Length: 271
Image (cartoon, rainbow, N blue to C red):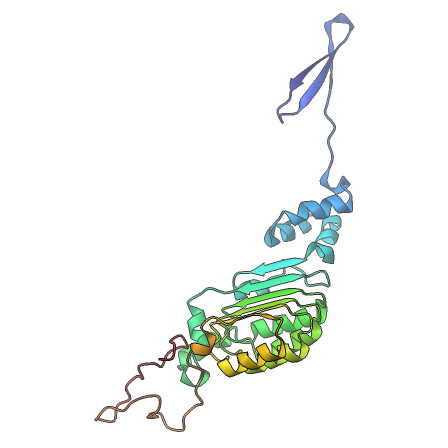
């Protein structure tokens, strides 16, 4: 008996028969749906979200694998548009979630609402509630969440983060970066409800103050806390009744408003 490769690279077994004939034994093959559930889950785990969704469309058995909550312990999103897709599932198996939006629109979101132009407000209106609504779904469906990272989510609010801390008691790591709406209220919520929290980052969050950080350190001395540049940034200012407020915009001799040297989208440090 000898072997020879077939076109697919596998080895065929060739057995000589009387009269000079040969019998070729074809290699065994298996359809993907013949794999057991554990193997299918392992196979799906190597695919990205879009590939998982596409594969699930081929038959009901693979769709059931896609819907299995144990397939989704990790979710990473790189834009807010990805949150609206139907290529993932939220469930109790989710342990780690990150939403990191690095776009020029993040700068627009970080501008104080009362300083935004009509065009800037129209840009923000397309996504201003998207992250908050998504996190509320996480509160309802993912009680075992252990790690959350939000970067560039300029519209996420203290109220939403407070509810998340209440709904996900196993949360151990909360990392916030460049989240302009986060204030000392989130720090107070961490002190009150973050019983399992071990790590908190509030980097480049301009409305977090040094006093708030000191209170949190006193309340949670074992918490690993990072607040890079947050307490040194210019916080939001209340809207002024008049367009030219001396404290924010110096007035030129002709009555024209001049931009304040330190007014921005929230990125310059105090002197």
